[in-house]
Length: 217
Image (cartoon, rainbow, N blue to C red; front, side, top):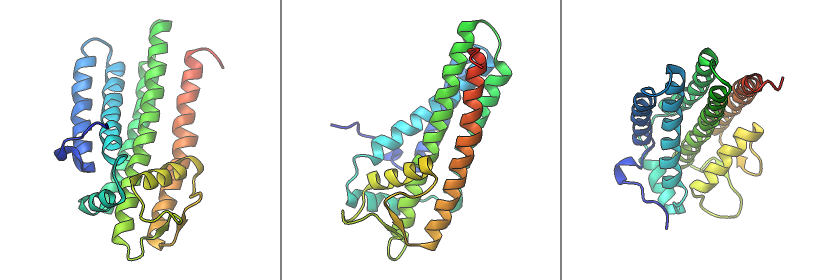
């Protein structure tokens, strides 16, 4: 049996708010025992983990009927939806910059900072694609013909939208799905560009930073 998410936390907006509160509390707790840089990193990482946990346990078990009901209930406007994605990307950048500014101390401290950076950056990367999956599902059900052809499997569930979103995030384009809506193509284009920037700049900066910390360069 899966973990049941309370009904009040089953919308993206509620999950984002809950994750933000958890992040602030995480910073307050962790920051009391470590330096400011690690405290901020701990808060960001906790917020990402909370959002991904709530989102995944909500979306993954949904049937096609549940997916349709959930996607049409989501009250995020398209602009607000993509703003969440931008915030996640900014959090990843903040993670890297924060660690860079606070990277001092013993080797063990540097190792902890490196691990926290990688977790924070990859968590933000996952939040980006998790949010776009919800966005694609919403657009699919407000479009007259769906706008996305997933093949012969019938009505899609959230697993299909997660697959589409992470495929765009890792390949910078759609794979075996066909986008038939111009509006959704625009979203895929923005998603692809953000994913490319994310991969080339943010992840690259994190890897370079960790390489420097461990003296591998």
